[in-house]
Image 1: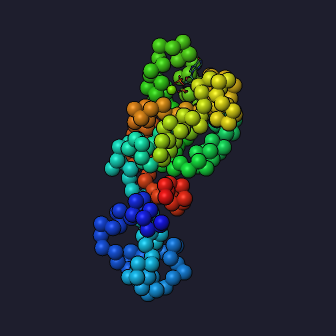
Image 2: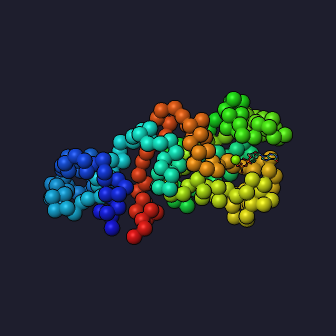
Image 3: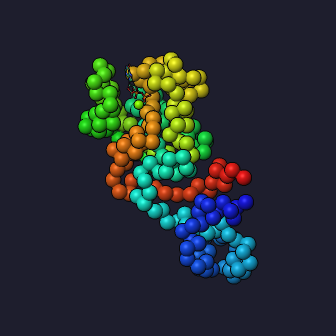
Length: 229
Ligand code: IDP
Ligand code: MG
């Protein structure tokens, strides 16, 4: 089970080069209890495969710039832009909201707290610029309380993120969704989430467009979250 998963999720960068005992010496924490000679023997025998190698790989965060900014739609690399708006921050809901995405099995690959410029807020909501609430919306987003901007990654994360957030008008949001649990006004609905792959591309680019702002990493529980047997 693990060997197959490792090939799928973590091992590709390592498999390209010949497996040497040295690779396992760098996987110090995962293999600290084993002597290097025993490890080398186990490597030769094919006993140590996925965990040690993938750990070595994990030690070296790589830039995510090598793939599309919103990942590949419909795969585990799909990404969405999620932002906890100033009301969510003022109400102390940051931890609870992050917790929901983490517990669901999604992976956090970008995070920052910032007060967006007027220009950024206007660009983010540009499709609503003719709406009567646009000015108020931009003021609320740029009022001085930070927005917690995040990029989450995982299978179907764009659609599922929207489902977890709930309807725009919290009074229509299902109980148990974020808005359905924490909000009662459309103008203070706590959270934003990309509504399509095209929106995710645009929004991640706007908020995390600089090189090196996103990370690629492999969660230790990947087998227990992603496997389809
Ligand atoms: P969404 O956030 O669910 O994607 P949109 O229709 O894209 O909903 O609207 C963006 C944001 O604009 C909403 O989350 C909300 O903060 C604000 N908004 C939308 N409609 C209204 C309204 O009728 N009154 C006040 N604010 C609104
Ligand atoms: Mg929207």
